[in-house]
Length: 210
Image (cartoon, rainbow, N blue to C red):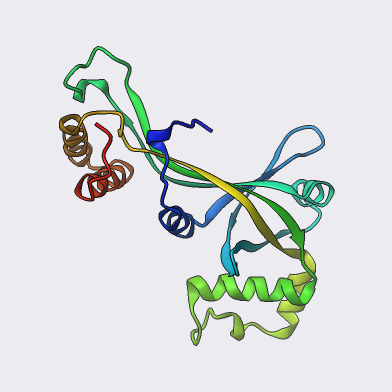
């Protein structure tokens, strides 16, 4: 991880909130020949001081088999990102860069039995669909659920540690940061505007490195 103090978010609650907002994550581990990775929606559970990530994946895939052999996983939460040109700096005789936000969580994965797998699917479905409508988990037939939980397997990941990069031009002076924000908003695409909003929030709360 590209780790510099001024690109690190020190507030744990801010980091956890970002993880929850970007919960379609990449779960990676050690495969036999190459690393394996799964793009998965995750749910969060807090038990005391510990964070657990729950979800499900297809059985008997390369990543399922790899995770069974090695419980150590890295979960990557990606947020907005965009190119920032040095043309926008007061001194442009330096390299351009890329602003982005990401969190890496290290943890240990454990696979669940069918009942707990069913609960994991229920939890993630209710998170996005809600209850009491045609797509709710409780509308699925017992036969369908029984077949489903034989094809997939639920898991939980106990988070051991996590680290982050909130790279938002904190190494530029305040004038440059305001220019970057304006230019990104002018560019107008979703990624650029999201980064501009994150930068602007830091400016208005006084968390600026100049």
